[in-house]
Length: 394
Image (cartoon, rainbow, N blue to C red; front, side, top):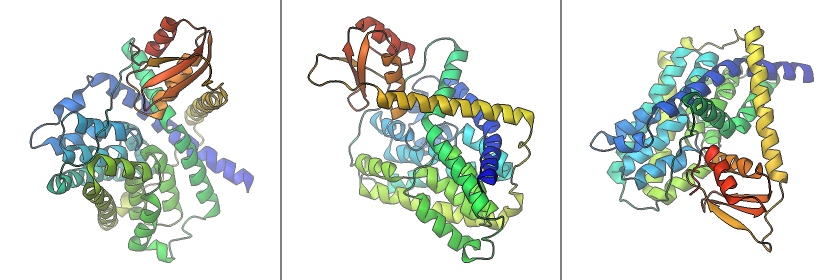
């Protein structure tokens, strides 16, 4: 059992790596090409909802990273509808997710998934504007662009994208491999889950509260198809999984109120089920299970590179977890940090600060927007390290 499972893990990894790495680089290019604040400035007028969706669809933001960005839109003057449309559509896609979906499931499925994200995002935005009463609490959110040559910015942003989702990618690969080995091909086709409606509801019940990024959800969706579930069930998972989770629900309720949260969840649920059944009726034969990369030397090489990156991220997090904690009874200094929007940003700042000679302990507060340090380090050197990492340190 172990050998087939390991072979399945490696097979999924070789399928994932080429598309994931290409998508991460494309995400880095997109980040560099779009001027800072571009997304925010464009969301005005009657087509604000549509603009929010079209601008959000290619962005490489998963459901944790999209929360501060979406709420930041409201803070900067976007309508509730445009902000919610961005929150619904953006985490379902991204250039990396589209490429991985095409590699695993074929281009028709990948493009249909993009269209589904657009439809559900626009529907959620328009319905939100119809019911919103402008309630909720808005929290500030900032964005930050890396410094240095453009190619370095691209690589740093691509690395940030991968680091922000690496744990969920590992979970997705392991779950996919386990399902592939434990559930033989087509085993569920003749059960009640082989029917689109029942399979869709079952997958939806699991997907709504679950956190999974758009890219990591693809190998799991592929394993569902391998087990005999219809394409509609895979589409439900690819839409509802990334678009919703418990944290996102809480953020939407806090920022926009209960009515908007109801619209948010209803749109994701009804939209994923309805569009899934439409796909089963129109394009089920276009789904192809990609297996052509497994065994190719270049795919194996890229897979090894991806595994190396995952190991580096894991080591970084372990070091951060075991780093000396700030002693509340000892002297310390708080340094403001601008541009942190997620835990990945906080980790990056922490790694940069802990690497400065003389820093004996460091603790990053994402909520307060500062890093607390102890030791004999030169403060200007610490600030320079923070700026080098791509954040502001006044």
